Image (cartoon, rainbow, N blue to C red; front, top):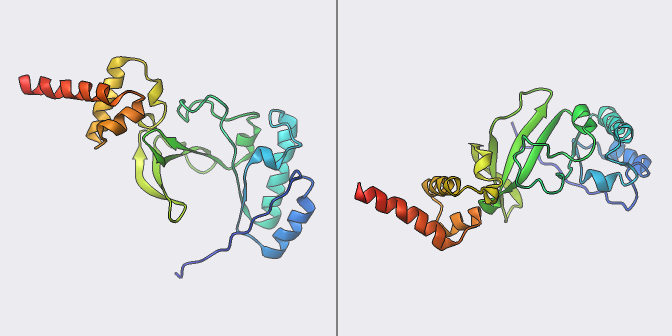
Length: 214
């Protein structure tokens, strides 16, 4: 089957999407897109209180009507609630009304990994068609293509998120050992755990000395 190529078009406005919906509908009718990406929800609907169930329900039904009438898939990006960067995706990371989740086909979480600024975690949350995913996919941003490539299909999210918030020394040391087994350098482990390189070196060197003394 021949590879299909699609053109990307951007629609920007200083108005709320609700105000510009008639113009947007004309554009959709003309170019017949296969995918519409709204980035981001709050900026697109500045006249909507995203914490108000009634208003967010009206907004979601507007988008569902657009999706149905145009036979187009719609992806909406939204930001996590503040101060949740160290929480796992199973925690309540969503902001505002839960109606967004109830009326959408699925939730996907895309977030930074603590192991590298180029790595991202992609995890499927609620979905109408599949069970929630237990593991996350590990992606790497390719700076040349500006697109993500799959590094691993199944990774433990806890090894990438919130590592600097680990307070117990023995847990920090266990994580340092695990990261070393994954091929991380002392410097990389130090950055991930928020510790000094000398501290990480002392921990892991002590393990090595203990093995040699057995």
